[in-house]
Length: 154
Image 1 (cartoon, rainbow, N blue to C red):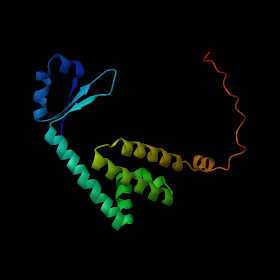
Image 2 (tube, rainbow, N blue to C red):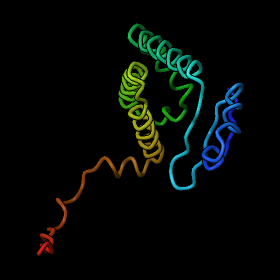
Image 3 (spheres, rainbow, N blue to C red):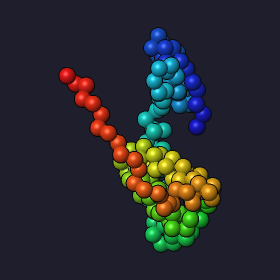
């Protein structure tokens, strides 16, 4: 689907100048001091939600019946997973699928997005052998003593 962008202020000044764009595109309202907003027709939104739900559940069923194939599919879509050790890659696939199915069912996809970002960062750490080695420990000592901060509430 195509998108068209408008300044949020243009929408506030005259929605009738922006809303006709919804006939053939989703509209991004660009805001300077906050996240952008997206306007879309309800029919397109519901189509996306139902499509995501079906795809997520189909992928979850595939993962239960053939975990190697599901992992192969996700590894092809998320090439950075090849940097993860096998056990981590299995955990990554399971966690991402769980968040994807739950998000498709509830409409709350932020946990999936956060997990995806977290796993990508983990894979990047694993891609550097020295960093991966250092992060696995052992770690010397238990750190220095930290003094209690002064109470400045008085």
